[in-house]
Picture 1 (tube, rainbow, N blue to C red):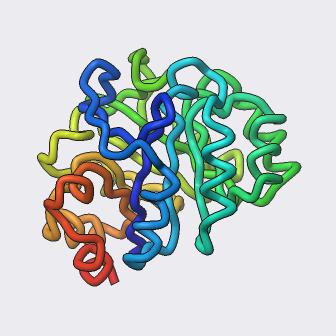
Picture 2: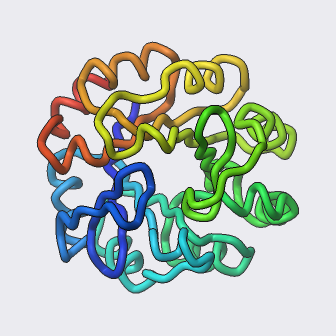
Length: 238
């Protein structure tokens, strides 16, 4: 299973939020590029970038930082946050981003998914399913819908999507462990590759996510606080 360090960018800084709340942020670095290089030097095989300004406003905001990271790293980068139209998605791919992560767009504009699949490979797209109590949250997790996570996963499968990332918003940033039940449903009921995200705080959590069949795990706050070392996480996921 692949261990994927997350770098969340807000106003040019590398931050972590609690449950997606922009008022509850901790700044861990003023240089996201250096943080990406740090994780690469410690064995990361891919980096997960989130443009939090983009997630909140609906348009990618931190392109210069994203481009700098892509150019400096020798490993792939996947990017999410504010990618809600075809041009933005394709511009990121041209920039060298390996995989784009779409969340809100998959709910509001399913035609975008179809159009993207006509332009790039399914392997270059991740659908981010973020939710509370099994229901999808959108617009940087600020708005709650009544749409079922499993229903959206089924729709994405029908569209030709191969990979999703599931985050339980209530677990994110609080180091209380992931939502294993919904993650397991997604991994075992659908035919999708599932990346687990949100709340992973121990090596046992990593083992549990691996055991239920996930392809990867996003690590954020646990790495930044030192609760887990990246090397131990990689060894546990192997």
